[in-house]
Length: 484
Image (cartoon, rainbow, N blue to C red; front, side, top):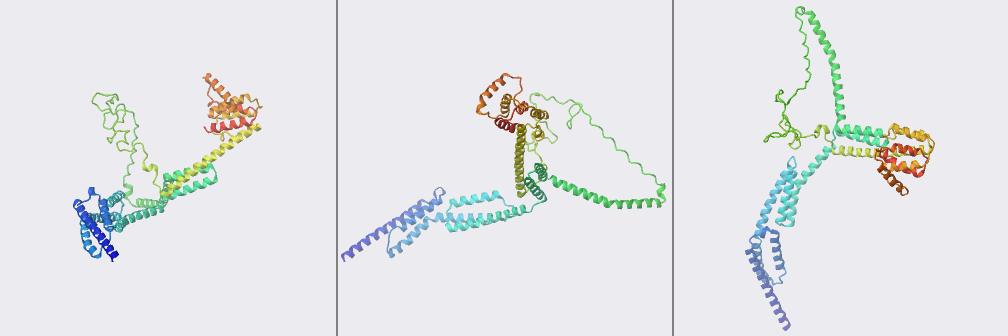
């Protein structure tokens, strides 16, 4: 019994302690509710966090008997309800505001034209409201789903309409797509002329010239067809008129119609001295374009006033178009598929042309070096293949290859001048010779620079015997010089 008596005393003491803690917590909640009738700085999340902390402390306050817990639980609920009254009122107001935003989102989604700026502003308002006033997580998620559903449907509808518009290609887009396919076929052929012709056709299709020419041809054909159909009718009418004139007795007595008066000759334009602007007297001389008297407005040099009252030369500043091309000059607008197709086709064609040009340039250099090695002027590439080379320069090269091979002394200096003209580095073994040549060129101010004499320098190299190292140096220099 003594052991049980000690245990009962211990249980009574703990129960009394737990009751005191809970009563103290209820008193603290009541005091806090009196002091905080509203959230501090509208921090409703912090307000809700404090209430949650009170609930956690009540839950962890210790065990009570059922009778004592039934006595304290109504007091606790009343205290918490009084403390949470401001938050409940704010949540009801927030719920009404969110319902209004849901209705506004529904109206925006049902509008024929989706206003992106209004949608963004409404979403920012919703986010600000959600960050200010907390709600139950499940309830808040349902409200958010109801808010975003009409907007998502509107965006989905807009995407579908855009895809339908992109899928429905017009005549201009079809012409551009066909021209882009022709450019791809020309790229596969590897013929530079075909590629350039296909590119020109693509540019004409993009600018709308192809459609305009087709429309003009169709209109001309229709006009010709109408003329052919109207010819017999006009002949029949003329025949009937002639028969009627012959049959009527008054036709012979009627006076002949007066001949049409000849048109007046157009007077030629004659230059007139003085100010010929509209509304100005031409007899008076134009005003001087100097600084002018004090107080006068000086429009000279800034573009004088035009008929419309806007100064010339200030189109962009005063809202005009300036020198920018009109929309019609740039051609009609392309769809997304046609625009991407023509851009990719143009890029591939330009890349193919560069590759073909590099390949042709390499073949030209190979033929030139082979002609030098075999000293055969007949293998020298033509003037067209050599690019912008003057005919006299090619003739000098032919004469150099036709003669006997000379020594390598003149070739060394000529190769140095060629490397200087092409701005290429010189091999390490010839750097001293290049520096010495540069010093000599500084003393010869009246002599032409290497960039102007590279043609005769190549002729000097070709007049010498073939050498592997010299051939590599000549090839590197001509690779740059022939492209200029």
